[in-house]
Image 1 (cartoon, one colour):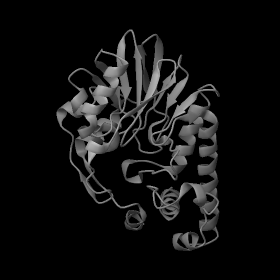
Image 2 (cartoon, one colour):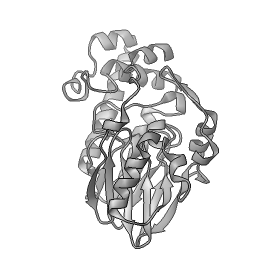
Image 3 (cartoon, helix red, strand yellow):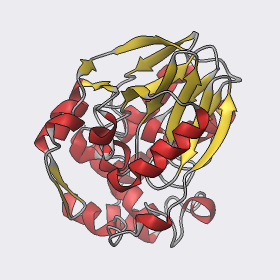
Image 4 (cartoon, helix red, strand yellow):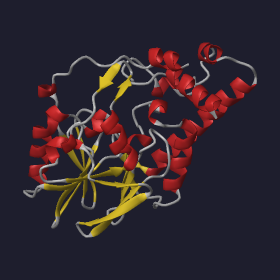
Length: 291
C-alpha cells in the first residue's frame, strides 16, 4: 500500500528557479500578516515588541522573506514557530536562527534531526542551527505584540508534530498543513499523520477559537472559519465513503475506478494539484486499515 501511495502522489517538482518567486504580503487582521511565496504560507506578527513568524518556506527565499519583513518592521525576527517539520515550512530555519528562537513540537525536532526519504526525495538531517531550541508536547503561549500567541498541538493530523497557532487578540489562526485551500490535503502517514486524526484535530481547534476568526491555511489563500469547517466536513465525509467501501469488500483500486470521491474532484483535483483523488483514497484506506 505504501508503494501504491508513493506512485499516486504527484511527482516531486524539478529544481525550482527561486529567483522568479515573489513574496506577497497581505494583512489578515490585527497585528497579523501572511506572506505568500513558494512552500507553506508564512504568518507574521508585527508590533512594538518586534517580529515573530510562523514557518519560513525554502532557504533560497530567505533574503526575499527578510526583505518583505523589513518593509513591515525594521526590527529583527525574534521568534519562529514551525507548524511541522516538512522542508517547505522549515527550509529557512537556519537563516533566521541568528536572531530568532525557534519553537516547535518535540516531534518536529526529532524528525528534523533524523531526516527522511519522502516521495522519492532524500531529506537530509537538518543542521544544528535549524533545530528548534524550545520544544513542547501540548503547546505553549508566547506573549508578544500585546497579545497571547497560543501554539497548540491538537493531535496527529498532517504529521505527528503539528502545531496550530492562534493569535488570540488579532483573532487569526494559522493552521499549517492541517488545512489546505488548494485541493485534497497531503496527510503524511510516514511522519505519523492520520486522516482520521486530522478531523479530530480540527474539531479541537473549532471548539477553541471564535467562529469569526480569520484562518491562514498551510497552502492557499487566507480565509475564514466557515471555509475551515467545510474542509473538515468534507474530509470526514470522504473517510466515511472509503470506510463503507472497504467494509463492503471493495478494494482500493475499485474505489479509485469508481471515482469514490467524485463529488470533490471538480474543485479539488486537476493537473495543477499536489494530491489527486486516487492518492487520497489510498491514504484514507491505509489509515483505516492500520487502525
